[in-house]
Length: 489
Ligand code: PMP
Image (cartoon, rainbow, N blue to C red; front, side, top):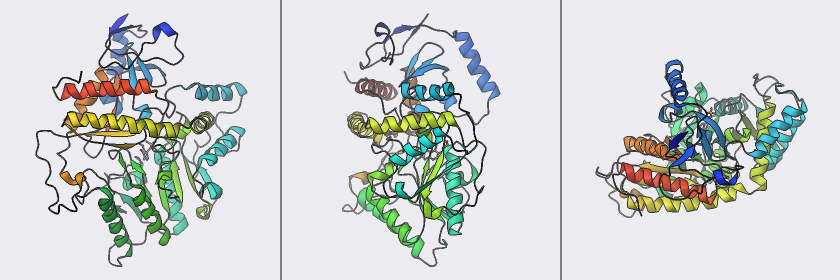
């Protein structure tokens, strides 16, 4: 038996007595059973650091050993429970081990169906595609083709880039500052951290730290004009590209939602010049941002959509969906062994259907708005919170150095809206401290953004109001601890 500090949250499906009400600020001492002794857990962590690559990521900031999970909650080998707002990097739309997902997986297992069939047709795959097409933005759904690729988001990005290059016969790609598309060569090249120059980098609109110092509508308009001018200036040094790839909300880049008007402009600009528009919805898809697909906020219909993470219902699955006009691939043009994962397709179809039938996108929109309002109140109290932003249940809280001078605002006061008041420098160390303090309080959050200074919340769309309160309370306590100030009463 171990006494832990972790506040317990009702565990779906757990007998009454064991589940404790959440929602009170602060840690609660609760006794939990421990099935893996501490020594064993320490051994697992020690062996991990001795044997796994230096490139390991999440494991460094989150030294826990998950042994059980349900919904929002993960239980560590030490018996502690954590509210998981990382959700497998935004993968778990329904949280961990949702009953409909487990049932779908069990049904396949019990049916004796093959688990792996390359790209052969199966009833499971047929059902997945039917459900997926049902959710697609109208305009694409009626003319869509789907290509199953390797199972990661980055595989689908590679497929999309290759597709538009084949279809247009051109090679250049337009991509945006702060973008993240994955870790394989082509996707990495399209990402903001790339050093290769085959990609033309354009400014992504952002209110906070806007490169033009303006933010808002005008900042987005300048970003759009720059894009137009790069394409139309015969001497811009940018040949007509094969495609443009963008995230409707930049996730890893620090949770920057693209303004709807800007996204529509990108659609008009690309359409007018016959440049296929690729929406990378790997992280934003399946209800996360308050619409089933994030492009739907703007009404812009892309030519290509790159999908992964939540579409596999927690198992690896990725597809590229595109307009039939682009379907110029020859048989075998984009092959791969692992394109027929039946369990992932079953789990994915169950997830897509559940999100659709239970209007979880609307729920994400409403709850996200409330959570962001509460976080903005917190920001008003703590000057180390520079910005709160997001869409739906994709939320970012940027930590800044409260002691440092703000960046000077634009001299033109008319142009410099409230967003241009001048942000303080990003504070990655503070953000890391908040993440650590969250973990101590039983809350798992991820960091992101250009300077790793943005605390990211990606809870499952099934999170209850009570659980959301518990998440925000723990985050508030963590910020208070880092800011060396008592939390609000
Ligand atoms: N695109 C976006 C927008 C992403 O957020 C990610 C992963 N965070 C990827 C692509 C790459 O996905 P994967 O890690 O599965 O390769």
